[in-house]
Image 1 (cartoon, one colour):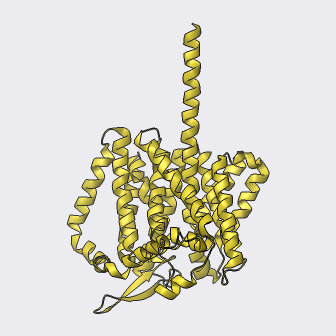
Image 2 (cartoon, one colour):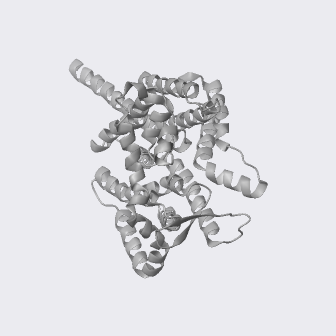
Image 3 (cartoon, one colour):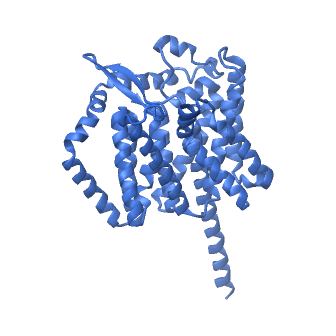
Length: 410
């Protein structure tokens, strides 16, 4: 891939990672609503025109199941009454995000550049959210307050840029890079950004967001210990900083997290919806009549809302073909990449993508996001890292065989 194409792919990646931020300011400043990710297919076409399809060095297996999913979603457009041809626009943007993630991480040679992009965009999100939640310049930084009740009183739940439950996607890269930052100043900046991200999650009262970000934080440090076989100074320093911060500001932390704690204790208000969505899938996946796309109408009639599980959403939108595609494109590569992690045959960039890929998987199991670009971006990224690991293993096998032949010839 040539240099200009690399810049185009980086631009596309930045657009996906900052789509909510760009849309937020387009609406508040210019009063314009524009689906920024609609640009992705155009950028991808530019890259393919410059380099040809050969730039997508992806195994046939993944091409096959992507096409299978497209066929399933096409049946959905044809068979589901309330779904129009506009669905192809959403599907096109989602697939473009997948290929952007694949191209960026497959051809990426500068891991530090990845960290810089993630830190910059993540800290910018944190800064904008904190300014908005503080009430400064509400015309430029608007906040939408939704209402919810704990059974005794009504509470306000703020929303900034994106739905509260979607907000975690935009903080994932920032939290995930923390164990991989080597220099002191960037490390301190990321620590401050991560603390800010958790403060925002507290204020937005998103249970799934808090759980997933906390998991990424803990698993990220454990992954460094596993890969390095030692505890670095960062692995010692961050827990100390976090503990001191929690002790010194315990009252403010509890005050900020108070409503989130109330929501966490009320499992029935959200947790049961996730369970119902999964059980709904399991009760129908073996019924041949449901193998063609049925849409969400029956589920909404029974439960009053969309299914809160992306695997169920895929099945409803694209039938059994889309479900198979989800398993082979979203789940299977993660399992394969985990095997490389367990055997320690993976570099820092691979561990970083694995962290965010796993977190994205956990989040989408609680959300209805069949065409959400963020989940497709990380699916493509995981496939790219897996392919890089396979290429490296194949290269090492060839080198070992050559070495054995030379030794045998000697």
